Amino acid sequence: MSKQPKYQQVADALRREIDNGMYAPGDRLPSEAELASRFDASRNTVRSGLSLLVSQGLVTSSQGLGYEVRKHEVFELNASRFENLTFPQNGDAYSTDVTNAGRRPHQTFRVEMTPTPEYIAERLKVEVGSRSVLRFCHRFVDDVPWSTQATHYPDWLIQEAPRLAEPGDIDEGTTRYLAGRGIEQVGYADEISTRMPTPEEARLLEIGPGVPVLLWTRTGYTTERPARCTVTTFRGDLNRMNYEIGDLAARNENDAK
Amino acid sequence: MSKQPKYQQVADALRREIDNGMYAPGDRLPSEAELASRFDASRNTVRSGLSLLVSQGLVTSSQGLGYEVRKHEVFELNASRFENLTFPQNGDAYSTDVTNAGRRPHQTFRVEMTPTPEYIAERLKVEVGSRSVLRFCHRFVDDVPWSTQATHYPDWLIQEAPRLAEPGDIDEGTTRYLAGRGIEQVGYADEISTRMPTPEEARLLEIGPGVPVLLWTRTGYTTERPARCTVTTFRGDLNRMNYEIGDLAARNENDAK
DNA sequence: CGCGCGAACATGTACCAACAAGTTGAGCGA
DNA sequence: TCGCTCAACTTGTTGGTACATGTTCGCGCG
Image (cartoon, rainbow over all chains, first blue to last red; front, side):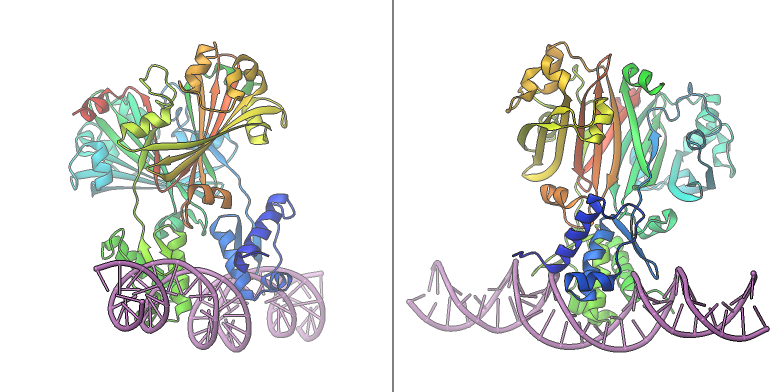
């Protein structure tokens, strides 16, 4: 006999069947009523079990349609290559990467002047609440929300590169624009973490329950001081970040085949 | 009037109060019964709202005790420094990092020979199902579960470095042991992603609902081919990964203060 | 004084009922 | 044939009840 609660047994059984391939990604699960009769449980109990799987990101549910096994389609981001001036680019790094993968990039854009939040101020080594320029991107791939990106530029940098504070895109990419104004970023400090999305993030990225976000903070440095800080939130189910360290000739020659 | 469901209103109101600081990390929320009377809702409805916050990782619940606002304590991992032979180390990189942070490391250990799983085989460029050595770590910091780490070594490497297949620790660290046998890793390919934990992972890491895991896959290369592949799962609420790229003199001189 | 038991209160599990709301497809009418 | 309506089926929301189980603390007994 099992001492586990019944809703757990339901969740475990369904997870096992999904792992076994009895239900493939995209398949619909039996309806709550069918499962209730199969497990000899009430509809509420079955719902508890299913909601476990939903909050674990294994299945999704939609009213009127039923429960579906989630599909995972991963987009790779090569973080060590990003903002490398020697790499051939057409516009910004994001558009380049997405286009090269044969998908369609789309982004909306916002520029504003704000007091620097604490998290950013620490990294830019400026005072909390001092003014900084925020450039905010909402990015899509094939019209599916993919990430949001908020880049803060400190006050002193705006003197050197005034176009950053103006609305509208910078066609050649901000990294190149800055380099052209004599601001060369020579190093980056990246921080990566994860958590469940805030309601605001869930809305912007259109992620349902059970999908975490991947948080990427990149602080760019000149030889003297930090010049900008970018916080990107990715849909955790659709993105993977890659870093290459050292000599990867052995890897790359095989990838070229 | 609001058209939002009542349980959403409960969740939103509580989230707002937590964000405002009305309830600080570690504080207990009012009981379900109190909230039900405050929001003029049934206990079931309040539970729905609370379970949203739990699955978002904002609060935890425990039977008999109530709901508590989750505390977040982050441990930093410097991934670009890991396994760098020039960095002074005392045993393996994990113990060194944890000790330097003034905390107490502890790990359990397992070595076995297994058929190579597909995910690993792709990265090691060996056949799926071919034999490989798996060294598995379960790591704690101050007796709190922190991460699990599974490193696979391909068959050919065992010929060169037989101690890998033997149970028991390798005191100087596997990277140094390999280097001593003429196997020098000159590059790493890192992949980072996130998802909700499997039940097995939730058990090993003792994470409740609403906490994602951070997945780190590192493939180490010699000049000729991949030599090992490590998959690490971290508790997402307790870990952050750092990468340093390029010249960070401007950062490090200030950190030294 | 100290130990243990139990009351009071917390959440967890399980069930029932009713109605709301989204989706689909059969079938009927123009 | 085309298009509309509606029945049937799906999940979503909200209420109720009962009992199980974990936690705390004070009271009373030894």
